[in-house]
Length: 75
Image (cartoon, rainbow, N blue to C red):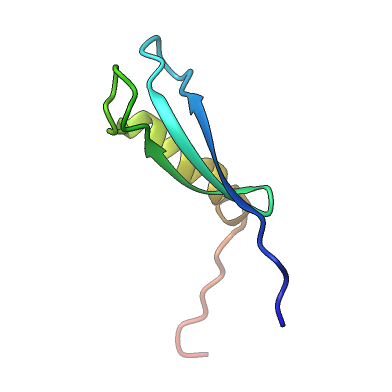
């Protein structure tokens, strides 16, 4: 069958601004696959701000963002 996936949730705080919102960072085989606001955190109560969300997307897709897209229409 396939490889075993080692998944876990790491509880941490965001340090992008001074709010230090709580985050649940979901990982699979050591790679971040999802970031959610920590529901029990008193500052953000499960929400995630746009700054934290875009930071996650940038880190998740850095390998894709760094490449040039060469499109050949009709060829």
